Structure formats: structure tokens, C-alpha cells
Amino acid sequence: MPELPEVEAARRGIAEQLLGRVCTGYELYRPRLIVAPTGLTLALLVGQPLREVGRKGKYLWLTFPTLTLLVHLKLTGQLVARGSNIPGFAAGHPIPPYDAPLPHKSTALRLDFAPDEHLYLTDVRHFARVQLMLPDELPTTLASLSLGPDALSDEFTLESLRRGLDRRRGTSLKAALLDQRVVAGLGNIYVDESLWFAQLHPARLVGTLDDGEVVRLYQAIREVLAIAVPQGGAKILHGRAVPPVGEFPYVHGRAGQPCPRCGTSIVKRTIAGRGTYYCPVCQPEPTSTRVATSEGSAASAAAS
Image (cartoon, rainbow, N blue to C red; front, side):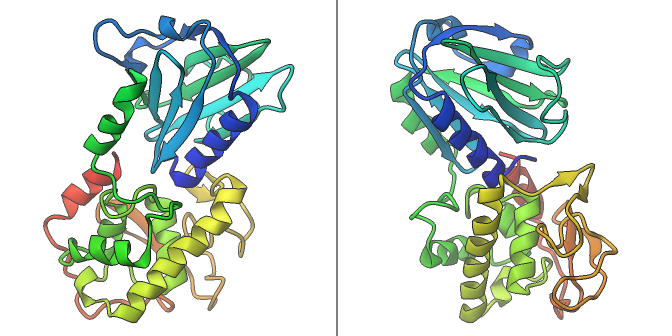
């Protein structure tokens, strides 16, 4: 799933290369991509300049004077920009390959910009959604999502993490960090990486953490994102980490490979309903691996 670093890469690419350009047309290849009330259509974009590109958690929005598009790439969404007057960029899920001819058979939407630029949204699983709304409706819509502080924002502080974890004391760390109400933007990859950095077992109950461990976890999240965001996200293909052993991502997608910290083989097991990677030595098993029954709701919240 494209998570915060991948969506942030898309936001930066659009802001740097398409902001201020006028939309000259569009092609909607998959109508089910669009969620909109009666009367709002993509036709309202034509002739309008792109005024704002924003992001919170895994949500991305493009605002024109007449319409805002709120984009969620879900499991396999990808955004690619190409044109004769821009360098182009690609972000999101790595399939199809970023250099594949476009439109692809799974391309859902193309937005055209003057003079000859195009933004493609492709999704091989067809889960991505684009919600249309009037620009002044965006704040209310974002508030209705009940997202926690964005993990890159100034609102994400040690105290905000403490408050979020306090509400999930009976669940595992993995489930709590996947919950977008605790912190917005983290998903399966970056939760695994953060817990490895913090040397905390993903099945450990939140309520067993001491204050020093919460501080360590907060610092780990910040450190992981500081590595991932400039790279445009982790390189994971078909569930496996692409870079050589010892490079980021350090544990996710690396079952059976040596831990970069201690050399022990990374293991994979299902925790909070998700395939989870960790080092059994650096992240010691908690004395009780009981997982609260509410973890199912956390997994659902992580997908939003």
C-alpha cells in the first residue's frame, strides 16, 4: 500500500511540476474511481488552474478554483506525470513499472495540463478512489476522516503519540500504530521499520511500555520517515525488499535475511492481521503475547 512517503513523493512531484498549470481536459477510463454528489463532475476542471496540492496521512488533494479532488491510492494506486516540458515523476505502488507505456490497461484517470503535460492515476487492483467536492468542503471532509496528526507535521509530537497510545493500551504495538487515528500516514512497511528502530516487539501490548520506550518509539518514527521520504518510499516488489541486504527497508520484506543490527535472521508472522517482519533478538518477545480482540478494528482503520 502506498503510505505516507509514497504519497508525499506524489504531492511533491505534482506541486513542483504541475502547480499553476491549467487543466485542458481529461480522460476517465474507470468511472467507478470517482465518488461525487450529483452535479459535480470532472468537466468542472477544464480551463481551471491547479491552485493547491496537499496531503494528510495517505490522502492527497488537488484543488482547482471550481473543484477539489481528494485522492486515496488504497492498496495499489500509482501517480505518474509525463510531458514535454517537465522532467516527470512516478510515485505509489511499483506495478506497473514506472517507465511502462501510458495509458496502461489499468489506468483509471488522465488529467491533461497546458501546454502538453499529463497526470495519470493507475491502479491494478481498482481500489483507489477520487472524491469530488467543492473547495470549501475540504476541511469538513478531512475532519470527518478522524485522522490523527500527520506523521510529518508539527502536530505529531511526543505528547500526541502518548495520547494516541493511551487510547490503545490493550492492543499490540503493531495494531496501535496501524490505526490512522493514532498517527496518520504509517502503514505496514513503516510500522515494521519503526518498531525495529525502536527495538520493540510488534506483538507487545501498548500498556506495557514505559515512558522511555515511548520516547524511543517516537524518535524511531521520525528517523524512519527521515530516511524514507527523500527516497520516495521503500522499494518493495511482490512483497520483497528490492535493495541489497543492509539497506532501507531494513526488516520489512526481508524474512530469512540477516538483521543489519545483530545478524539474526529476520522472521515473518501475522500480527494484527498483517504480515509482520522483525528481529527476534533485537525485538525480544514480550512475556505475554496476548492480543486484544479490538485489533480487528485497528486493521480496518489502517486501510482508511
